[in-house]
Image (cartoon, rainbow over all chains, first blue to last red; front, side):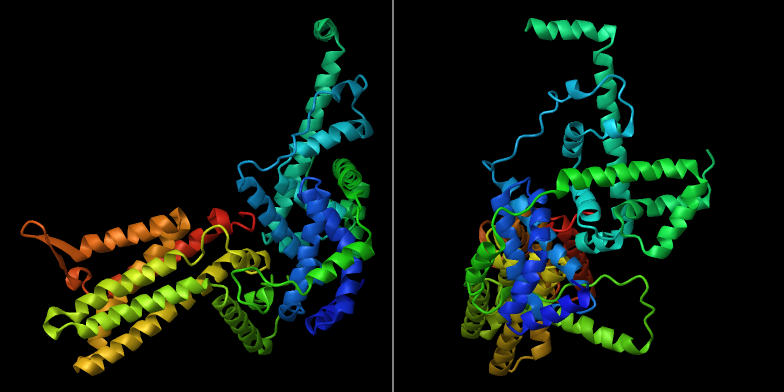
Length: 206
Length: 327
């Protein structure tokens, strides 16, 4: 949807037009849900609830929307703030459920010997583990830039940080992922060399 | 491998090139450079691998609920009453419009600058106005009641005993106590929503502080006026007895409540105040002395402003208010 169409929609939402809200909802619900789902540790129900909260906030505050802002950026900014709030509230609860950290261990044996080709390095299983090693902040920048397709200046507006911060986070994320994957590749390679045989034997003994 | 300024420029653009969000001019520039530079081409492959991998790993998710079903849920919530702390109406709308980040290419001519200033003023006004009904009613009632009682008590005192001391003692303490609970304990639903919209936490806090401090000052000035008419005292000299200390204790309480929590703020402000105002004379008899803080002096006002600045600088670091990633 073009952003001038969306601005017109927001104008009608401000006037209390539920149909206009529904149009905006249909256009953005899926995108916002998938973004929130990833920010909320893959909790589908929670993502649904917060997606609705975003549109509830839009419904109540469309009158204060300023036309020079990109509607998409504005929506994601509200979503980012709601998700940050929700995560913080959960982390404050002492008994709050936390998803288990990725168990990395089981995946190494899948790597073939001497893995060095780019496609192999970015193997799916190890990649999931490597992404899990990143902080939520770095994952969020990757999500906004590569999954949601925002320009880096738009990502900066959503997160309310300078563009330089976004650039350094995304570069850090790339370096960290490559370091992590390279380390896993090395370990995998070592485990099939003679020095690694002892370890293999031990494993069978257990 | 030689890296020149063209490489630096190219690598700066590679993330967005890989994301496919680069404008066509910049994209062509990157492609021209990549054709001549093997090192940058390798970087591009890494970025492309990362972008594709992130999309694969984190992009392929869709909501479980169908669109009509989830819309039905949302529609039923549109008329939902607001959180308990709000008194009705429209919370988010009252919080204020989103803060805008300036567009990099905005070559703003001079004429719209006035309009921009008006817009900023409206924005700030909207934020402050928005906080009015979000503050807990108890804060308004308790402060108002406290100030009214202090003024009434001062009116009953014979002049020589010192109505000044009563005002100087009570007004700053009442204000400081109210300010300490500005941001409320954990369950301040209004504040949660306020902070979810893209308005700076600092502005929200400043708005709330200005509101309550203004409210207390207005009430106290009213009481002082009443007193000065009843007693034929000078209004300005009477007001200067409490205004400086009130500003100091209020900003101290604000800073303490943000940094250490409301309970510490009330305790700390009260302890400081009592230690300065009460004197132990001849064994155990206590004296209230208004002269302890020397009324309203430039120093006291400067100190108050400094405390306010500390509180505002601290605000985004505070756990409850840390909405936006630290830079």
